[in-house]
Image 1 (cartoon, one colour):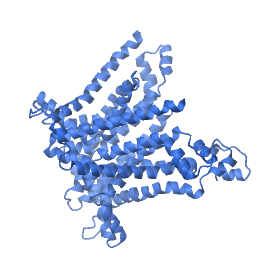
Image 2 (cartoon, each protein chain N blue to C red):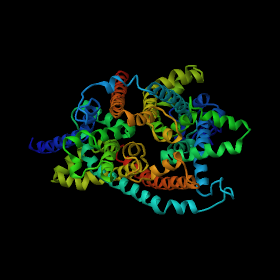
Image 3 (tube, rainbow over the protein chains, first blue to last red):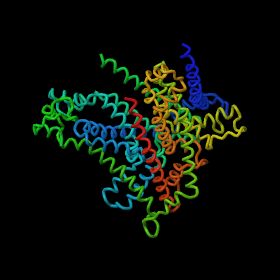
Length: 275
Length: 310
């Protein structure tokens, strides 16, 4: 027992210090948002109740959710076929796919947006009058800037690749596919009724990580001059400091809870399968 | 030469890539040859067009004069020289210092925290901590900046309550920024170290103890050497993450602490001086070089540490 007890104190101290460092800013932020401890002493939940009526809230959230949906669809649409094919039929392309997916890690978001804005400035001068000009204009449509979807998909590739790849490692894809094909299933049927359902956890995780990335992304959108959610919060902070803190806290805690729910969902399925 | 062709020639040598079924049976279930490329093609086209075009234009712009100049776009090294002089160089050095200091602190502090999280007896606590780490490390950015402004900013709760400003505290400084960066770097370190710490076998500790080693000796002679690739890899990853961070600093301090990310963004979104846009592209290339160096160090370390996790 004596051997065990000493490290327990150390562990307690570590938890305590960690808790203080990580919880105090959150607690202070919540306190600030309801008016405790701030310069003005009026306590109230206006910052929370007023969120929905705030100028630009609905627009920026709608834009972000549209962007997130499109980005998730694009990332999964690009990665799932590529990874499944690489595992089933083209192992030699595996290194290439891995390099392509991890390459965006080398380019920080600010550098990426520098490149993108250079393309957007350079393109129209050179393609005026051609269909490409129309495409470049459509990419920057303020209602739905598809250029952001492209940038987000690129930024999500490394994380999405790792998540999907480990999901594929966890199932025996080859055996599943061969069994399905041996039972007479067509290729599309094999993909949609056998492969994808078995990847549910990994697909869900990838979608969630991509959603989180799009919800929190500030750099690219701000520099290119669009106003999705994160940019809107920063703009809001100028006039409604309490409300911007309130929205941030709701966002952080909401993401955390969602992540826990997904982790629980992934765990709940496993014991059933092993029985 | 595929396994199918090998089988068709009647070559019965076992092939490692053959999978679990016999080659003859596998043949019928193979994807048609065209489908192999069709599956990978969209990803490759996307990468070449979006990534290649942006990266290519950035590099091209970094090495040329602006097209609006009288002579048009000509090759020049002036952008790079400008990006490594005066305020740009100061910002670059400041970014490197800030990233190195905060990554070092986060790596040192992150190890005991990761250990406490991984060895926690309460599964719910462990999962909540890891999920929270995932949120803070990946989504931090803007919300994080606001939390710190509300806590330690000029009108922050702690600043007001403890009159910190009279003690010389200023959040909008090098150390204020370091404190805020630690808030997403420590979780990132915990996430990076967790698998490596999970891989530390209980038996190694027991074996060390049976041979008369103290806990200190176990850590310095067994655990730390095994963890070293993960620790170094984590440090490098943290450095890269802090180096390329923009949202936290932009939402928190504006431009009172010069950082290279801030200078690029300012040059891109503001009213740009003539030629400054191309200097921003050169700064972008500088950043890519640093980030590339980071990855070149990190990937081999990651592979090395993976050996112990099997």
